[in-house]
Every structure is written in structure tokens, then in C-alpha cells.
Image (cartoon, rainbow, N blue to C red; front, side, top):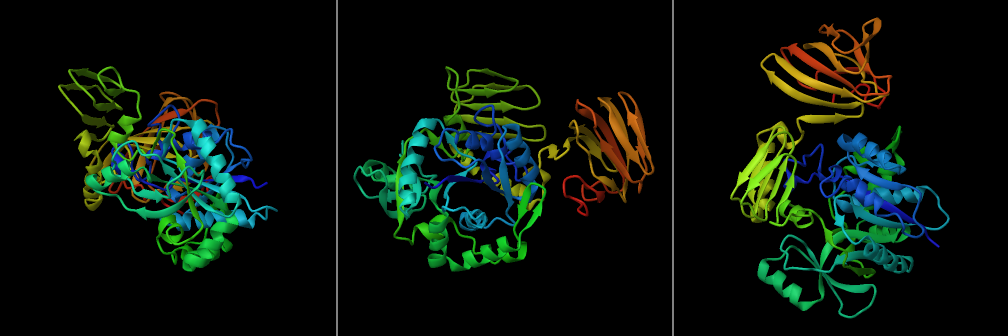
Amino acid sequence: MASIQPIILSGGSGTRLWPASRSMYPKQLLPLAGENTMLQETVLRLKGIDDLADDVLVICNETQRFLVAEQLRDIGVGAKIVLEPEGRNTAPAVALAALIVEDDGQANSPLLLVLPADHVIRDVAAFHKAVATGKVAAEAGKLVTFGIVPTRAETGYGYIQAEAGSAAARSITTFVEKPDLSTATAYLESGDFFWNSGMFMFSTESYVEALEEHAPETLVACRNSVENSTFDTDFIRPDIAAFLDCPGDSIDVAVMEKTRSAVMVPLNAGWSDVGSWAALHDVSESDDNGNMLIGDVIVHDCRNSYISSESRLVAAVGLNDCVVVETKDSVLVTAKDRSQDVKYIVDGLIKSDREEAKLHRQVFRPWGSYDSIDGDDGFQVKRLIVNPGAVLSLQKHAHRAEHWTVVRGVARITLDDKEFDLGVNESTYVPIGAVHRIANPYDVPVHIIEVQCGDYLGEDDIVRLEDNYGREGTNT
């Protein structure tokens, strides 16, 4: 009996959920629909599926690798983390995973259960039942996708038309792109159209054979990329040059729309891809007035609104069907029915080269985080938090000097040829060009106020001489 190998796709940027979701810290790494992050929830809901592999295989990008690894460690889950060299859509991403699993040399070809990391599924038992149904079809050589039983005429999703009947796994008639409202209404009334979930199940062998027949360029490029992979601590790095020869196609376009082996398993499990603030509001627990209020929020006479505060008091009066999201550096206000259009704001930020499109004010690193508190020409103030047991890279700067003052915990400092501890209310000065490092060998986090002074304060003014996290020689 074949085992089930979960493949978690965690490479998206979630631009429609800006300002909470940003390209370097996207929605799947945030606790938007519960106490755990969406990635963690995706992995945790696998518990209880029969014949499940001991670990998961996660596809993510370079900038998110440490966050993904840390979040999986936090829930006690083992993982192989594959660093996709560049976003090329789902067909190449899953091809990398399939070929890596194939190289493990298991006696029976494992079944790949492909799941995006940013979905909400409320009825886990129904999800498990659908997976069991998909397993039977996948073991028979079918390429399975899961179609969501629609609850409304939705224009934001693609659709799958399946043959009518009560079969557990139905033959697929066609895939269709996002429709207009009248077409979506007709789909809903017909009863044989389902939302396209982007979740799949098939054997490693079946997917590789389908690629060989329908998308050979993708298979060749990914095979070359996997064969020339390198390994960096917890991470698998497929070869970049080979991977960039891949066409950028989805699994639907590359395989599912062309093969005769595609089937669809209906899924009715309280599913959402949380593709907008309105969608997040729909899956959140609202109060008696239909409001979802998060953080320090006070409202009067508001209805059916999603209002979130991260760092300060937010007060609202007379709002109906609105979204207000406050972060440390940005505030979004939109009508709920226009929340899909947040992507245009992000497009504008990217065109203007604004940092707010990529980073939050608090930026997470493998050793902890830093928060840019203040700054102007020639200076910048940050709050560093160094986790217990963590060590920053041994580094130097060409353009800035730094002043460090410890405000919580004890830090171990390397400064050129000296090593010493700094406690609360103790400080040191790091001149331009000095080789330095902060470490925390103790059991509680260290908080440091860092004042940078210089003619250039960019994050790329770093020369890493040694690094515990595989970043030696890089400046990002």
C-alpha cells in the first residue's frame, strides 16, 4: 500500500491581504484564521490521515526559508524544505518535489498530496474523507484534483466542470477561468461546476509520466535542476540555471487540461483560499453586529466590518461593510466589496520601490528580529531581539557605525579581538569597519537598542565573514 507524501506549496505572496501580508512575510506565515499560522494549520490538519509519511516536503523561496523551518519546528513536524530558485507556477514546483521523492528510492511509488499552505478548511473530517477517496483513485493511476462544492456565485475562483452523477471520483469535462457574475450564477445552478481548489493527489510515477507526455520541457529542466541540487543545513537547493529553463505553467495548464487520467473528488469542508480581506472576514468569528475586531479597537455603530489593530488604538464610527487594517507602518481602509483591488495598491508600491510592499517594520531573521523604530538622514534606530541560543553573523560595515545598548537580557559581544558580555543598561560602540557579532548564549531573549550612524544605512552594507545559517558571503 502506497504511503502519502504531503507536498506543501508555500511560495505565494498574498498581495490582496496587504498590509498584513507582504512578499517577504506572506499570508501563509501569519496567524490570520486562528492561533497557528496558515502554514502550521495546513500541516496540522494532516494528522489522522492513514498511511501518511513521517515528514512533509515544503516548497518555498529563499527569503522565507528560516521562517518556514522555525514554524514547522514550533509544532514538532519534521520537514524537507525545497528552495524554489524562482517562482515558475505550480507545475514546476510540484515536479521538483516529485523528482526529489522519486530519488528517495522507495519500493512503492508514494502518492503526493499537494496542498497550498494558505487555505482554510473548517471540517477536517470531511477533508480526510475526501483524501481517502482521492487515494483510491490515485492508486489506480488517476490524477486527482479536489473540487469545492460552491456555496455562492463566486467570480474570484476558477471552476471545474465534472460529469454528473454520484461517483466518488468524477471524470472532468473542462476547466474554466474566473467567470463573470451571470456565468458564475449559471454554474451554481447547474450543479456540475465546482470551485478549483488547487489541491491535487497522484502517484509520483503518474505525475512524472504525465509531464513526460504533456510538458516534457518542464520535466527535463526540473530533472536537471534536481540532479544538480546542493544541500544547505535543512534546505535542498535545486540548480538555478537548469530550473530557469522551465515554462511557468500551472498543473492545470501543463497536465490536467490535457490528460485523460484527470478526475475530481468533490469536497464540502468549509474551504476558503482566503484570497482577500472579505474572504478572511467570511471565515472569521464575528460578533453580534457582524464585526471582526482584532487588537486595540473601539467601535460605535459599525456593522459587518473587519477592523484590526497591530500597534495602536483604532476607533471607528458608523462603518458598514468595511475593512480597516493597521500595522506599525501602514493603514488600509477599503470597502469590503472592493478588497480584491488591494492588489493595485501593492502594484503601486512596487513601482515606487516602496519597502512596504516587501517588508514589515519588524523584520524576522533566523536569529530573531529587528524593528526599525526611527530614522532620518544619517541615522537609524532599531530594536533587535536575539533569541536564546542564537548568534548573528560575524560581520562588518563599510558605511555605518553602530551603538548598542542592552535593555533586556545579557548579550555576548564580539568586537574585533575582544569578547565580553553586556547586561541591562550597558552599551558599546562599533566603529565603521570593525568586525563584530552579537550572540545570546543564555535562556531568555536579549533586547538591544541599536543606533546606526553613517552616510549609507541600507541592509546590504554587510560583509558576512562567518554565519551559522548558511549566509556567509551574502549581504542580504
